[in-house]
Length: 108
Image 1 (tube, rainbow, N blue to C red):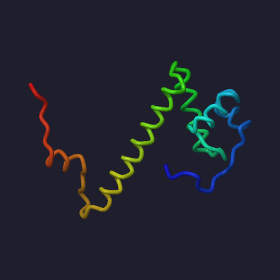
Image 2: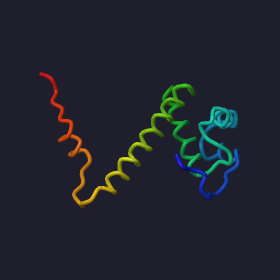
Image 3: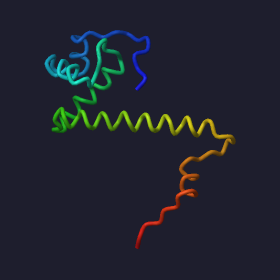
């Protein structure tokens, strides 16, 4: 994601209080590059997601995979919206156009 824009910098101590994770867990997320220093509001949101996933019983390697897939989906959706924006005409519907190009019918 194209992050690291000008934003309020957050300390690890504040991240611990705001995210509900322990200091050790926040530092482990930094070591695993799940978030990056200097921490920002986007990183706090990511730490909160990590806390929710941990509460669901998912371990850190699993969380790494989930977050990587989430970032890919966000990137793909942004690319898709950008492609739709560039297409002439106001009625552009990418899903409908793909369906016409590559029709798919479930096998019976």
